Length: 186
Image 1 (cartoon, rainbow, N blue to C red):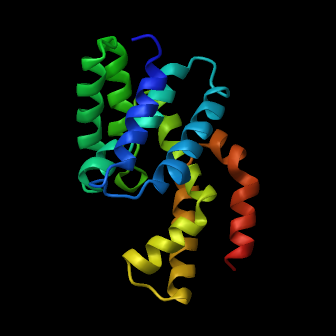
Image 2 (cartoon, rainbow, N blue to C red):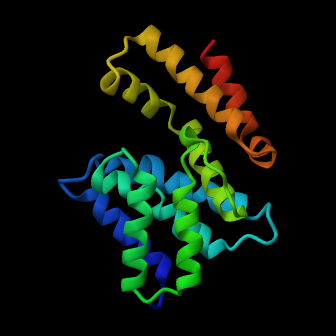
Image 3 (cartoon, one colour):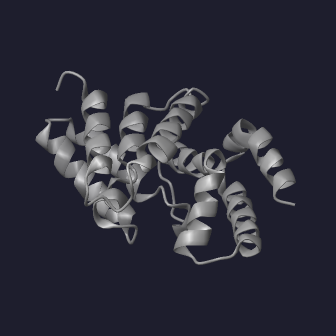
């Protein structure tokens, strides 16, 4: 595969566009693109991180959710990523690293991260919430059926919980947005 990252990016975008996607195409722009950008920026803070693994895992981390729904999407996503990357002839040892990132990215599951790449993916996924506060409000109101007052409290609590799960390096990276969000959600 000449450019695996472009192939993965295109695959994810096409899955987001499909009528059967569990999310609209906006997830590609509102979550995947910023999340991958954060992952790549965080990778610079870690000298031994495999940037290619991080970028591919970033694009694939929520593919299970897009294709099959949110429940156990870390497990279904790892399986989908493995199948697709094998199909493209990607090296098995790198596939295992990518699967580890996807399997352990969910902050709500309190999963152990065995590699620096997995920690970066989990942190970047969490950080992306601070870029999409409107999406958190949308989910609280439309998916959870909350009113505006309840939604504000829910969004604030989600961001506080997210903040607590971040590594110290990632907290330094996102601190200005966190502080601004807390001021706005008082």
